[in-house]
Length: 272
Image (cartoon, rainbow, N blue to C red; front, side):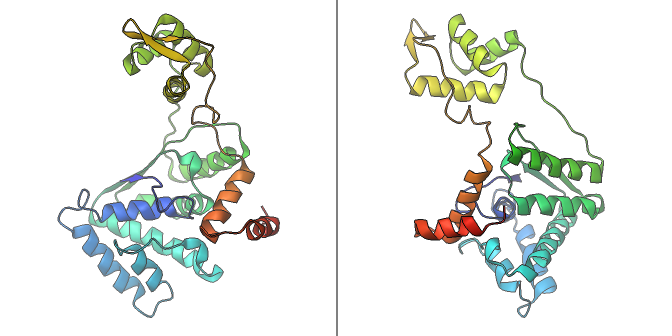
């Protein structure tokens, strides 16, 4: 299962994990409905209608209901919810070997990072046929550094490998550009100067150049007509500033009818 944050989970604590669990209930990954049955049995065996988290998890497993919002849980229930999520995932992995892929992990929220750390340090990854792959783009921002530190703790807890992908050599980079689209040597050279061989940045910078009419099509290939500049986000690999992340998190919690004064008050009181 690919753990990502599609709408309507965007910006919500644990949203990436909730989205992955709902994927497991879908026809593509559970054509015979066995995992859905395991989830339903787990809900009634571990929670029961009288449990304070029963409604929360029942809503998570209801494919037709809006997703639950973990940020609205009472403080004393948060720890129990994280432990229950770990137990649920391990239960599903015991029923069927499970591989969870967290792509773009530099965007993971603090709750999901804590859940991964708790799962690893509790030896959960050694007690069930569960494998977790995490990929992230490293940046120099403070937010990304905290993510890297958390994921490094997870790696040490389970003794897993860390693979570092190096940028492409110049010749390989030019070959990649020409696979993306027919490009002149001048365009390949400019993309190399912008990205220094980073494949993700290369694709983003090329798309940006086309959209901003920095290149044109002539003679069956793309040619630069001005000096290329990167997208405002640096090609999709830059991390949002921490302050901007906090604004987005509070906006997600407060809802679409948010008033500016309310958001300002929430941010002032946030200890982060």
